[in-house]
Image (cartoon, rainbow, N blue to C red; front, top):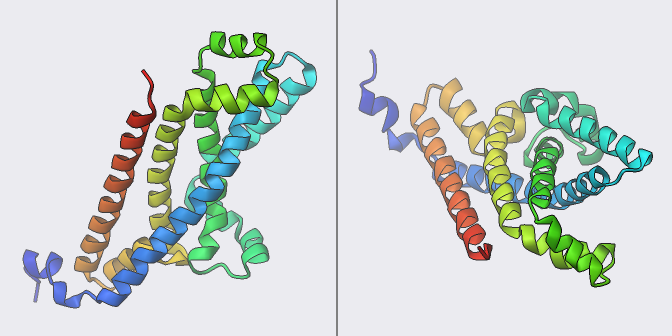
Length: 228
């Protein structure tokens, strides 16, 4: 007997609250831990891309090309394929290919190059005259970076981090389909595969709420730090 629309999507008695709660925290865990690594690696790579792009020396051009190529490879590879490709690497550093922790290497490798490009763009948008003025006043390389370049680009850096975080949440959902757990795994395994679409609906709604919160916070802090 076919189920009615309400029985298919709104049968909340089939929801296991503890399982849903665990999936929620697994998604937050994957997102937060991965974004910490993405923030650090992305900033360093973005700064390196920005610095080597500005220099005229041959070694700088070669270094920029190599970093740019590697970055493009990782950020262009579909996440599901990347996660499968690095299974041996994941097992080597994590010890398993299943669970929330096992998804973190693929999440970082996929998102860090993407954020690095956004960081490079943010740095390039800083007025060159401001940097030249700081250098003319005797500031060294690191003083220009920490006291001028980064402070001037903070709104753009926050916006880039927000975009990357939203993408990361989507990646965690895909990772769940191949054993990482989280809301994506719950929606796929208990929702789609077992025909319990109420689980899929609730998991999707929770993911959307997380995305809206992250986007709202990112927009708020980007606006607050914008001096214009």
